[in-house]
Image (tube, rainbow, N blue to C red; front, top):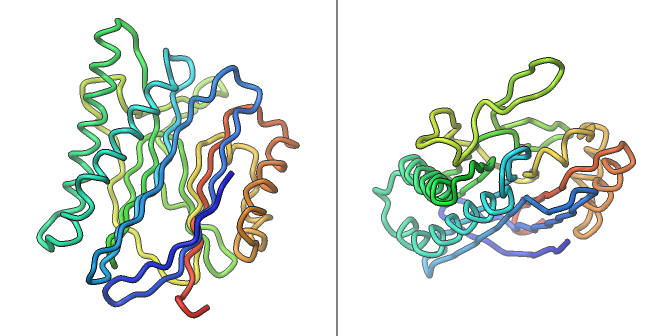
Length: 251
């Protein structure tokens, strides 16, 4: 668990953002999640943010490899693209994220084909460039937007129920192309909170009952409390979360 405070200014907005992250293996043999966060500001005050959580698919081979490849590709994309995205106003962020998804899928699929194995990962990723925000979502990892004491799920859920079990209807890396994904604009304002995590965080979490803690809690205190809640409820899966608290600059 760690936290980071950033003062981020962009055209027509000025936010103070604090980031808290947590990862916990639980009772699983391996930690198969992966995550990252990025921030960049240019000399004109334009800002770039990227937050992502990937969860290797259980029941397949090398879930930890699939999630790590996804996050490595995102890190590479962010490091090499963020300044271009900030300076070129003609860049289409929706297209950029679709192409990134294709690259991640190709890398994981080829990794498995070369080793004669099948592997995959989910992905929840939020990118914000100045006023424009988008979510890229595949699978059952989750993103919430929390504001005014309400939690709104902003990520699609690519699952179906069969024989009292939940099965993924889409993930990255198992096929040559990802045909079902969410690439959608999101609206953000201050004050609010983004909560991004693997499904292990949310299977047993009544998020609305913790809304006051999430909105008002201080860094380094919120995610460990939520982790204890889901562990007490019997969750044994890997748990990974990123909490992004957005405030006005002067608040």
